[in-house]
Image (cartoon, rainbow, N blue to C red; front, side):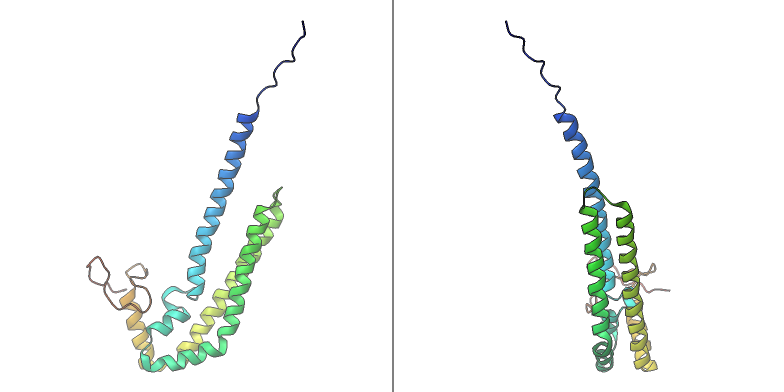
Length: 179
């Protein structure tokens, strides 16, 4: 009679559960980063200053002032687009570091720091662009811009309507003015 070797313990379910937990953790981090990226990208593409971003200013100034704003954008827009590209590359590098196995925590910290620095540089350049736009406007044009901004934000400073849309909100509520 031959003896059979004892069946090896099945570690498959345990390894599967551990792998699933690690993957869910990584998916959660990635989803959080993507959510942050989406909010930040929207903010940065709008200039990082919400209603007082370069694109919002262009959309909200009186039509007579738009050539002045377009001129400022033409002069400095290429610099801001370059910074936007750099910020996007820094975010991609952060994701690349996050995907590496084993995870290099220090490299991830450095990648996040680089991404924050580039995002900050982009926001700063966008806000400086808005300063130059405001400088190009007359007092009446700036007053019209302020009036248009106030019509588009609620008491908490949140945008009620997307740029260029002049209709009230779809829910039928009247527009609220910022204090």
